[in-house]
Structure formats: structure tokens, C-alpha cells
Length: 401
Image (cartoon, rainbow, N blue to C red; front, top):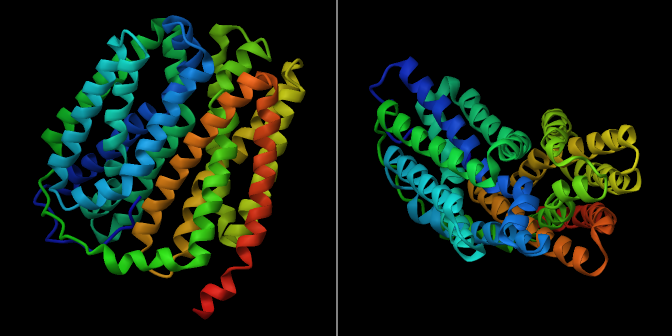
């Protein structure tokens, strides 16, 4: 994600209302795009049955998407961020429309993998430029609110996109969910093409000076911490739908509603994370990681009692979603300069954790069983809390440098 920079040119000729509508469309586009990344989590059980593959094999689709974002994100964002934004966003949404249509029609795991690889290339480019563009559209006085609206679209996708897609798959099948995302992506492409004004092309930014943050041990420690945090989160979260089905014995038709509950309480966690991160990003990361560990372990421990299961999932959901803004703010504040690059690198490293989590969770399922995934994820979350304390010791060295 990028921070808001000064305008590169005079405000667009379009009226205030038109620019406001363009910001709203960017937020909705963010919801559709990020939902495309995370929707696979809710669809794993059904597509694994339909394609005749194991749940751990299906889980590697999460790894593929995440690792592609991780490896391609900083490079492609730097390469394409100077392109005219209207054309850039329309092109990205057309790619998402085509990729989701290909996923809907995929006859096997290999074609589905290709359909996941293509949008993974485009997602970080959108994520790295959308908030900056929203600020430019809104103008200096309303830039903060505009950026917050785009972030709300991203957060909403993370916590609500999966359950909505899962519920849709219950009614129309997992292929129907991908067809729906394809249609929404195409609609957003058309609306942005019609509504969004053409902006001045951003100037190229030299990365050599910004890249000096990669020599800062305190910054690197915070980046590594993000990898561990997201690994903990997605070791269990990737297989939450299957855990609800197989361990908690939730009827297939009700799993989407449980995921919806996870997402709704998660919105509260997103707010709490933003409120408390200012009290000390590393301390808040450590405390929230421990709460996450409790929620993930308790979900497995009380799976047979649905009332207590709901409480455990609520604790998990609040901590899980709170860690999104906490990690983003923590990494960006740890950078002495080049905070936009720092934010983009955090997104890439978060996706490294997402991919590692899916791999670890799949391996645990194969060797120890689905019922142990929550405990392993909790152990990684405890490790994250310990690492947060160790990273804090690097700060004086960084400050002295």
C-alpha cells in the first residue's frame, strides 16, 4: 500500500461529485480484487471434492497466489506505478474478470492454478497505487478520508468477502462464485472507465535511495515479524472452513454463516487494531498475537460445544483482523524513510506468511490431522510474540545508526 503523495498535477477537471464517485468505485474495486485473493479459503472443501484432490493439495492454491504476490509485488508495482492510473485500474480489473472466468470454467487443478496466478500478478499493483490515487482524486483536504475508504474496501474483503463467497457457493457452487466475481470485476472496469477522470501520469520514482531501509536491522526485524505473524494466522485460517465442517461438525450449508460471524467481529478487530497500535506497535503486536493464539487453540479445544466455539472464533476473529492494520503501521513506522516502499514490502512479506501458513497447515493435516492445526498455529503465534520482544532490542541500534 502506498502513502498519499502530493498531487502530480492540477486536480482533474471532473467535478467534486464525480471524483467522489470514482473514489467509491475504487473502494468497491478493492473489495472485489482482494476478495478474489481470499475467497479460495472458503471454497477449499467444495472444490477439493469436485476436482477429486485432497484439502492440503487444494490449499496450495493459497500458497501459489500469496507467493506470486510476494515475489512480483514490489517489482511490478515499481515498474507500473508511473502508468496513467485510469488505464492501469481498468486493465487490472479486466485481467481479474478474465482470470475469474477461467477459474469458473477450470476442468482441473492446473487450469485453476493458472487462473489464480494471473490475478496474483496484478493485485499488488492495484494495492500499491489505489490509496495514493484516491488521495489525488479527492484533493489535499479530503485525501485522508478517501484513503480510509479504499482501506475499508480492502478490510471488508478480508473479513467479509470469504463468507459472502462461501454462502454464494452453497447456493450456486464454487464455480458460480467465480463467475460472480468475474462479472463484478467486469462491471467495475466499465464503471471506472466511464466515471474516473484521466489523471496526470505519475513521475518515475528512483528506488535506490528508498532501498536503503533494507540495511536497517530494526526495519528488517519488523518485516520478519510480519512474516511470522501472517504464517500463524494462515496456518489455521486457510483451513477454517474445513475445520468447521470436519472437526466442529457444522453442516455444510451453515459454514458460510460461521465465517460471516468471524468477519463481522473481525471488523471490530480492525477498529481496535487502529486504536491501540499507537500505544506501541511492537507491544500491541505481541499482545494481539497471544490473544490470537488463545482463540485458535480454543477453537479446536471447544469445537464440540457450539456456544463456546462461537466465543473462541470471536476471540480469534478480533485478533486476526486487528493484526492487519497493526502490522502495516508497525512496519511503516519502523522505516526511517521511504514509508511507501515499506508498506509495499510489508504486503509482500504478509503474503509470504500467507503462503507459508497454507503449506504448514497442509503438512500438519497430512501428518497429524486436521484437529491439530489450531494448536500448531497457536504455537507460531506465541513465537511471534517472543520475536516482537526481540525486535524491540534492535531499535536503539537503528536509532544510533
